[in-house]
Image (cartoon, rainbow, N blue to C red; front, top):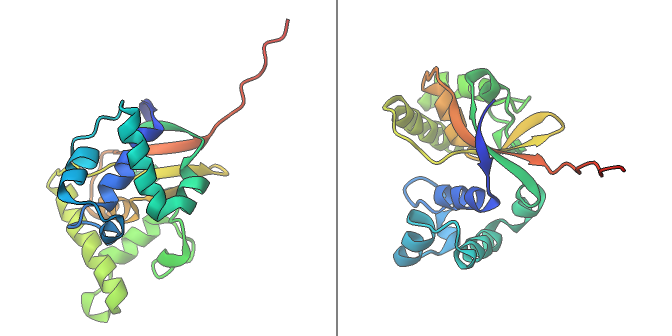
Length: 195
């Protein structure tokens, strides 16, 4: 992965909320209950250096995704990176929700399955996921920039915690370039200076 720069946890929380509160793009938006003015202030035009706004965004995320935040976001060292195609293919889906694509949970395999899955043979759930991925793949193929996905390192494997459909769609789009995303690593203890 090519490191672009270090990132703040506030940026990651913002990216998470931006993706999940977009009523046109994500099925989670209804759970956040943001009105248009609050979404404009906290998500569309954020001040990521404002402690007050960052606290509001964290409170909003915790209202819907507290277990995910506690397990995967809190206390990580964050980096904005460009992940190449092979790195994306080797990433893992976070849960068994994606087992209909691949028993190994590998994103590359899931993208290949969705790319060829016939619409008429798919169940209603798989069909909606497939259609959503195909729609997003068309956006990527048209060079539309979308919210950066978020992954964390777990035992030297990168697991996507937000943006599974976007990463899958990126691979389906035939893109050859790297995808920009946030990656979290467990904080490492710095060795004490000895005298």
